[in-house]
Amino acid sequence: MKFLRVLLIILLIVVVVVVILGMVGPKSYDVSQTRTIEAPKELVFAYLKSLKKGNEWGPWRDQDPDMEVSYEGDDGTVGFVSKWDGPLVGKGEQTITAIEDDSSIETDITFYSPFGKMYSEGYMRVADAEQGTDVTWGFKGENNFIARVFSVFSNMEKNTAPMFAKGLENLDSLVRADMNKEYNGLKVQYKDVPERTFMARRAVVKWADMQAFYATHLPRIGAAAARAGVQMNGMPCGLYYSWDEENEETDMAAAMPVARAFEGKDMEVIRLPAAKAAVVDYYGDYDNLGAAHEAIDAYLQNFGLTSAPPVVEEYVTDPGTEPDPAKWLTRIVYRIE
Image (cartoon, rainbow, N blue to C red; front, side, top):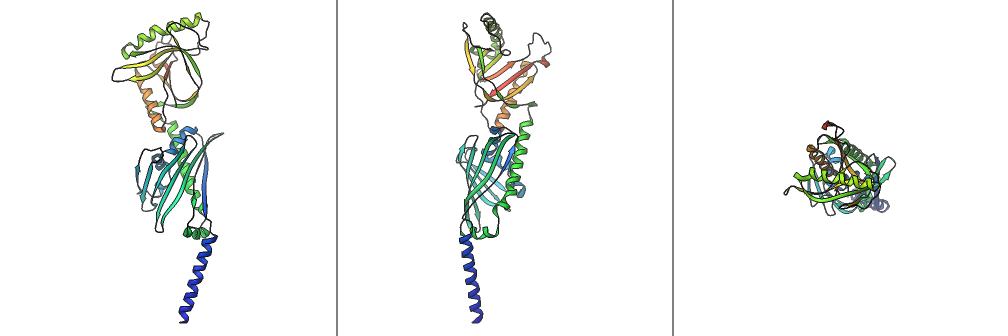
């Protein structure tokens, strides 16, 4: 009997201690890490809002290479779900709940544990920094009773900080590597392009008639600019609004960049505002320009970016003064929406 009384007293003390710990333990948590990445905010954000890409830079893959991942929905949109199940990282799922373009992503995270489901609110935020983009990655939530007890003995921020830091380090490496790699053997640059004004002749033109279209209208525009006393603001350009493979035709404009607009017969003024853009400087014959366009398409797809028409081809080198096609420079500009 004496032994049972002692045992009951000990159990009572344990219960009291657990209750006290549950009462004094932290009721909520908010842990995060921040890193500056030397890359434009738009490119970094594309890698954050994609949960599929998150599994490329997230640290859990290194921790549990046998982890299985599945997805539901349209990646990079509200409602998309990423689920995982691994022998080391356990089982859980993450759902995108809010996206503020080029600013923040919020997610609901569910962890399945022996103690039941545990919930957290994940967040990723970006902000302009002097050397690129500040990225903050973290999660927050409410501690249940059991979690409050364990929190007294375990520092969540100390335990999770290395995971967040490693993930952001991986993200940094991945974004900068993809920015600097070649696409189709060509270097794609992401840059600011200034506002430009063009005098142009726009029409739907068959591919076979494009050269004649340029030959007819570019000299006319140049002559009209000279009569109006308007200076050129660059070399002749082609502006492409569509590219119809089926009918082998394009909605395009033969255009001259000018310092100011003027009135011209059978001409229109086209103004393109300043924008972010993906740009390729292509050297070679015009017949092989398709490779440069494919390079930019691959770049945009990789970063989840969408271009806004028209595509600009600026024929920087005059073939009349440079006979070697290998030295012809064409600057191709895809303005980003």
